[in-house]
Image 1: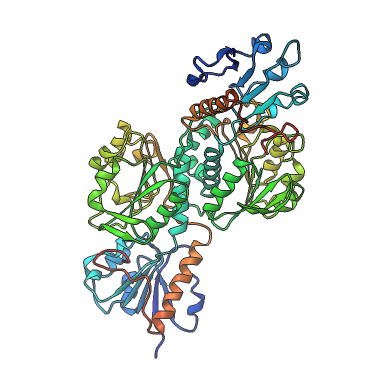
Image 2 (image 1 turned 90 degrees about the vertical axis):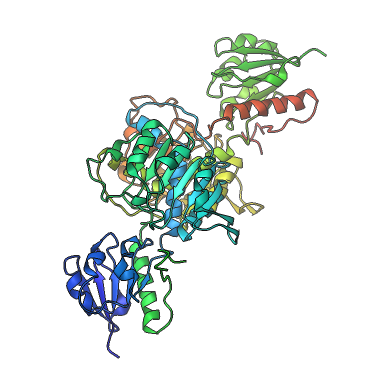
Length: 319
Length: 319
């Protein structure tokens, strides 16, 4: 049997793939050369998960990889018709980001509850200004996304005494972890009770733009909105208007419609908005975890075993 | 029986004490008039717990209150010889601040782990700068103080997956909550393993200045130090020198030797130092909680029942 051919759409730093030595032919490419090498490959590793190059390179002549693995939890960039309609299997990095993102969300919520940004602004002015802050224990969060990231966020917030309502695509009343999962149709109703609204959903046609003017209008004036999902979950101009109008009271965005966020974006100094550069899941060692995860799946693929983290291409995530 | 006389050393806003109406004569005073009214009082409520006026007013003629209650967890301002050697009972606000301070510490640790201050500094510059951050799960904390505040901090950090070593005055190997409590003599040894060092101890002669150059020298270069105890636990000039030398990597102080921290203090812009104005325990409703707590104890006092939160004046805290 000839060695499988693995094409890597590279990012800096590239994956090490040490365990593939002698077992596969590995070729690294960039966005420009992707289309040229695609017919050669049995497997495509989308290491640069911020790239849209796969979408552009995929249609065209020749055979296509039978397996595409993306080093990200979200697979939205791979959900284009030619790939959806092909027999190619998509797998993702489900599991690597859960814990880090849950900690990140907990940190943002506590920072907002304790007004840490305010304290550090007063510190810059060398000014002592005592304020009262809020307890998170006993407060309420709505977490949108019932996959592993949303669940881990829910568990972590629950450990801090926050009452969590988890929202998924469909209602479930016998969820082993949360008891109840609310259907997305109930979101607007739930928003009115929430102190914290957290978006950790997969980006699909159904979830795109779900946080719009109508959603923000349902939030409490004291609520805070957090997005660690994908930028297009949020209608950014609606959020901007909502923050300027004071409802919700604040927000934290780690993801944006356009990344990097351009220097002239009005979001940078929107009132009450905390910005971070798409890093909620990226703790030291995350690249090594992604590298290991792909190689583990490669072992299965080569052994003819079922792959893990296989995306349901119709749903847009690993069910 | 004549109505008991309750003197209140006021702060703004004053306590409401609604349940004392018709049951006690209540007189509000300030630092200047405290000495004049002290012989009149059966009970002294130290509502302004930032004041040193009790120490100055206490020696002098006339009877002294038989009971002093302070609306704070720390009683260090009341531990002067004339009160220590008197039969007067001291009670404190044990219990009110535990949960809020534990959340505050968790928020600071997560904010430092995720470099939220860095993100918000980049945000001010409208600059997208991705960084990798650290997991808190699996990291190690030393929490100094085995009273209810230290314990609650330990439990909260434990819920985030942080491994906690609790340090008290004496060693215990059968602690119902933590299993083991380390003796303060072991502190320097423990510091070398800690990612997070949290001071939540009572201020006593034994704990004053315990975080000095020698202690900081034992910390890891990547460690962070947090103080939510009392300012004099820390030798501030030693911390300043340690931060400038890069060990520990950062610190967060909520309390200071002198409060408010003077505008010309070199701490305001010390490298890696996060400053907040003695507010870690002060969540909305905290004054109402303190008000209720004193009145609950007053009910017991008037009924001749044992007071709760009685301070062991020799130890300097409620044992």
